[in-house]
Image (cartoon, rainbow, N blue to C red; front, top):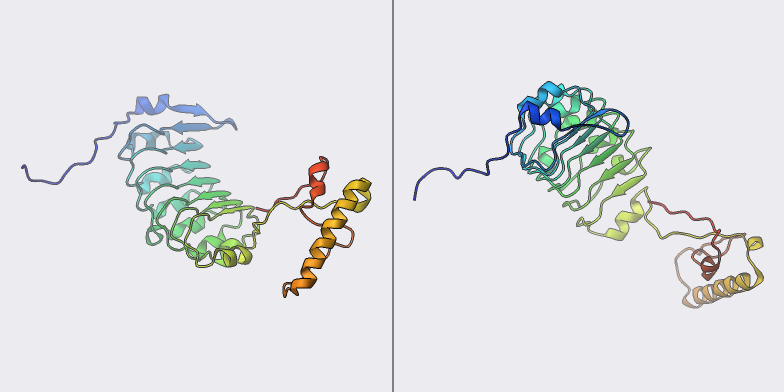
Length: 260
């Protein structure tokens, strides 16, 4: 057998011509360089000549490394690197101050190899870290005050820092399929409550039959509570009917509210 180190797959070579032909107009009118699903194994240096684009899509390739020259893309608002083979990211990624969207899910990133300078992306709105090998989340990500959505699903997390859960503008936190020691406790401690949809309807807005049905259901629940002498605090809705009551099936106009 011939000796030597086994070579990885030889990816497609991206030329400047190919890259220019891959530029599209984004929905907001900006320029998007779409090199997704191209079989790329190394970051194409030629695209540094197109560093004025607003969006860069290198997803679904076989990239193992992003060079520090990514900092040349100072206009980037949208960067998609998901579904590659990245084991780390350069600190230089923190210099992309205009970045609003960063997707680095489905890679091989570990907590130790997450760059500290991620916390410098002060304008970031969406961050996807799902499907990696993270066993913890840096508390410094709590400085990303503009974050609205963060994906942490399918990692090895046992807890989420309060600095991240309590971000002021956070509306969606997906941490499904992580080995939390007590998933119920984790959800209850989360400032982003994950509960069933509640249907709250004022009594005056119900027909007589629905009102009677709801009152019966409430009476049954009260009787059950009294019998079991449950130690849990009893909920009280002075002017509102019981949440998730059977009346919801007959009230198409009802108000809905769902917390993420």
